[in-house]
Picture 1 (cartoon, rainbow, N blue to C red):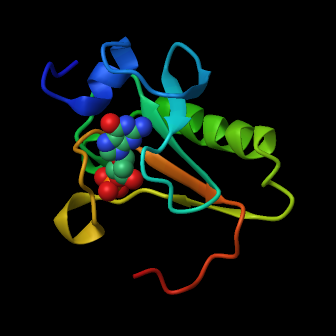
Picture 2: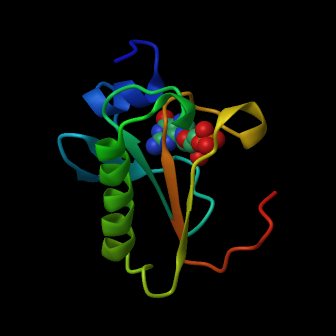
Length: 113
Ligand code: DGP
C-alpha cells in the first residue's frame, strides 16, 4: 500500500467509493466521472503503479474475471462493452495505481481519442 495513493486509500476504505464487487485480490467501484452509463474501475488491492509493474498472472486473471462479472451484473455483457487500461503519460493514465476501466451502456467509437 502507498499511503499517498488515492486508489490504495479507496481499497483500504479510508476514502469512500461505490463498491460493486470485491474479493481478496481486487475490487470494483464506480468511476467518479463516468464516461458512459456504466463506468466501473477494477483495481488490484496491492499497489502497482501501472500495467508495466504488474507481472502476476494470477492477479491478471482475477482482474479480468472481475471485469467480466461486473459487465454481467451491469447487464452490458450481451450488448457489448469496453475494457481499457490507460498506461503511462501517453496512454492517458492519471491515477498511478493499475486499474481497468469497464465502460458500457452506449456505442463506443474507434479509434479512441
Ligand atoms: P485514468 O485516467 O485511466 O488514470 O483513470 C482514472 C480514473 O479515476 C478517472 O476515470 C477518474 C477516476 N477517479 C479519479 N479520482 C477518483 C475518486 O476519488 N473516486 C473514484 N471513484 N474515481 C476516481
